[in-house]
Length: 436
Image (cartoon, rainbow, N blue to C red; front, side, top):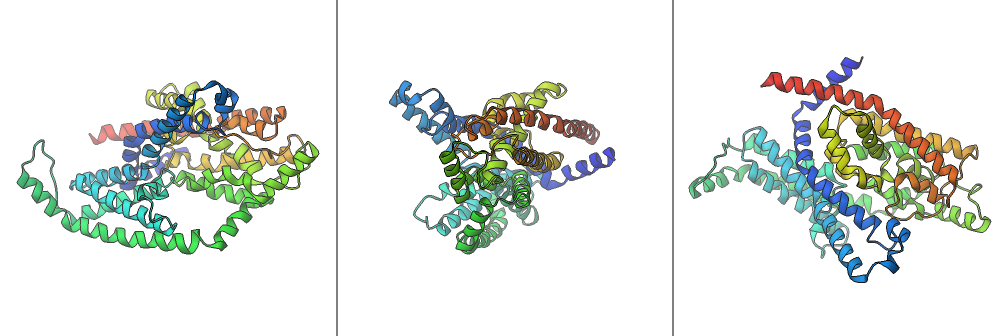
């Protein structure tokens, strides 16, 4: 059975699209790691409602000049790394796809940039923000990574089918460059036409679905649901989307504490001085954020710890884990998600689905038998994932112990996955050596 799983994963990873995805993510890994550190600084240090800022009373101990400089720099680097990540991903995905088929990779990459920028413009117009720069669009942000990679891959395939073969040389004369441009005119034109169609689809989707009152009401109902089965179904969808590179639903879970049901729980706890008998015990904000995802870092941080403790065979994985340990501890996980990679990696698919579901079920059981109280209090930005339930329960020590035990259990559950990953990497290296 194990060999069949390994064989299946190997066949999937040899597909052209997965080869392109892997190469694109590896190229973008340094940008993602840099962005993760600056996101840590922005969310946990240089923000008035952040964890470290309030723990160390930086409003009193840090000078205004240092705070404004830190906030300016950290926010700026988050914008130019994570805020424009889709543009980088589209460029390299198109470039590597075209290069795979010996086409003009440079012009393919630039065409993909034009296409995704038009899609970003369409997205902003649909959000009644047409006067703003398309560089601020959610289409370009790291949470929409899948769309960017697909745009780049499709553009690269258009160059594959319609473009002429291209052999890079060290120095090109003007005449050869001009000929390259003319050779790419047809695939570029077709790609831009497809980009127009995609932009219109994004515009209509944003206007008629995302911005509709019906959709907003549905989202509010899901966030305010006290039904455990609905929460598990929501978590399943959220984790699937996160695995394929769509991180917006997972990031929005942190805002679920502002809903009507969460507010009712907080008011009850403030009036009675306790959260044990709040009216809505099984909310998204009470289960998924503090336990299922631990601020979005549960699986990532557990995997990093496991690699550092047990995986001494792969120096590369160990270096990636060390580089991302600090930001992942404060819920800035994109550097590791891309560097490992976890996104669109079939090895981690089941783990990303099953482990958060188990966490939520165990937490719901503990709340039901009054082992721990529900998390109803607001939590500061950048609070480490393991501490979210502690602060969310107003400092209940049983919540902290439960979260630590849950985290250790997650590490144990990841052992078979890491062993499978090591076996697959070994087989891949053997296959590559034979191919040479």
